[in-house]
Image (cartoon, rainbow over all chains, first blue to last red; front, side, top):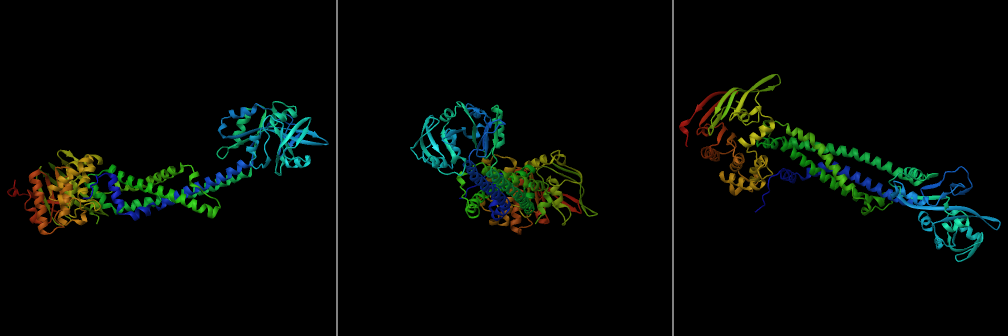
Length: 388
Length: 231
């Protein structure tokens, strides 16, 4: 014997839907498309941002903290370092800024020149782990110098000039040093530098407790690097924190612009989807005129009718949202490698866009049902009952 | 008791005014069985729907048990309709995607009766109209007579005091029509249900307490048939 369903608004809605399955899907198509575009836009943009973010991280520091100084003496790459130095303790103070969670690496360094025979050598004192973390492109033969030892890492040009290899010993300013690593050619000023542990370099240069520059690697995929720079300047007196504008950041902006354009497109599709739902609902009101008349003759009031239409649109919105999310995710995973030459992994995506998209679909659908529901509540029951 | 006092319903058809009801005065006692007769367009159904709280008159007043139904707001009127009035129609007007039982349960849902009680109450109403065994069939699987019985069960499931029947036998053959009339009389006799039935068929009106003849929206004859009473 078939089971008897209790009659509730949801029973009426589901039973009505069960005989109009095709219409149900058709009326959700607009919503499905809009949500699919929104989800796939988010997915692709997010994956591109991850990719570009990785590039940003590989690129090195994105804030350089230097003393606020007018005099210039040592050029190091594109950064100009003055004679004035920064207390080494500032390294710790940087971690007091409000956006400290965005700080990935803080690498203090001291620069100086030392005479070696007839030549001058550029000495860089560093904390090896921090520097290597910032310069992920470094390729070291041997190892990095350990803290507070007389170990040295040589840039490729210096290594050729000194004819040194890993294990060689050199003496600079009466300080014996052991070569523990040779840096492969980087094409930068690093090729001409000797890298020493920070405190060893401070002793060599007679500048204990100070540094020339602090390189900061901030995770700035979702934070403005300018704000962090300003926070550093507020926290540390007498320093200048310079954000480095990089090409990858421009790329990031391009991705954001493309994503915004896609979202605009999705918004338009969403509006069209809403119009589709409204149209279907209005057609449904017209088609079910007699049914509405019967309901009214049985004592249904506006609240009953609104409840039924709101539930219908809620289900349409849920279906649109769920299928839209699935289509959006599936299409970006499939289309990513084909059209953008990038792998998109759904597992790496944050989860919040899924419920957010479904909620958006439901809200859009609910908005679209208000006018049809109002129309239904205004139907003249007698005229409706006379409808053939 | 139903009282209509100088009730007029005017429809505007372009520049022409059509009087669907024209100054109707009527009193229907509790437990009366009233038949309303008249040619097409005479205002029979308009009268029925006006009493049924579905059609606001252009003029005049309708009171049921002393309550002026068109002075209520729409929500109060819908509640009053759920509690006091049941409808049955010529074309049964069952919801096609619901079974007979679910159709009968529908007014219970609208009245806010606890869902746990729906099935028992609806089955009892179906039993009353002799259709308990067809409860789980959809309307399309039922004969016209059976559909009308479901419609009656739906009309009485909330224990209303008034049942309004708009040509309930109009779509049925003679024999089935007579069975439906007998069923309505049984409900009138046993449960004391006030019934107002619109019909074209004098035979069906014959057993009523009172017959109302209408022409052009006016009551032209208001005839007592007390000798026909069976109770």
